[in-house]
Structure formats: C-alpha cells, structure tokens
Image (cartoon, rainbow, N blue to C red; front, side):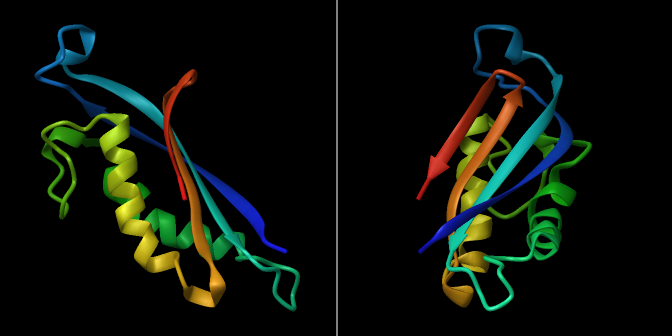
Length: 126
C-alpha cells in the first residue's frame, strides 16, 4: 500500500510579468502557499517520510531560495526569472525536488501545488 503525505510551506515574494496586459505587469507581491506531496510505503516506524526531513529538504532547496526575493532577479539555475508565473515556478520546483526525493527509500514526488493567491494555484501531479 502506498500513502501520500503532504507538507505545507509559505513564503513571500514579489514579481512582475512584463508581457502581461493587466495588473501583473507591474511589481507586486504574494504570500505563496506551497504543498508538497510524497508517496511511498510505510516503513517499520510507521512513516512514509519524516515530516521534519521533508521540511528540511524543501526549505533548503525552495523556500529559503525564494522567500522575500524579487523573483525576476533570482539567480538560481534554471529558475524562470524572465516569467515567474505560478506554472513556471511549479515546473522549477518539481525539477529541484524530483532528483532528491524519487527513488530514495522507494519514495516518489507525488504532487506540487503552489497557491499564488488564496483562490488560485498551479499544480503538477506525478
């Protein structure tokens, strides 16, 4: 049996979309809400992955890199700073986490959901 566990994170960042024809063309900020789902079997301790291990990994690779930053100026490998849409950010987040999670102890990155606003999000599912 496979179980999916989910950890949620928040971070604050600013961005603008120069090509956008509306309000998003100018600098503005968001409190992003990020949900990471990891799927795997339950180990002998009753865990799929320790929440604190998942927290440490996601904070190091994602949250600490983006929190309180202008996303258009982030200098991270392959980060979509020219168009930091929620969709492009989800793609980048998946690329950062898949290699670190997939295959380790039979784990799989199951989904990434990034809320840009309380009612709007982009999502990737394995």
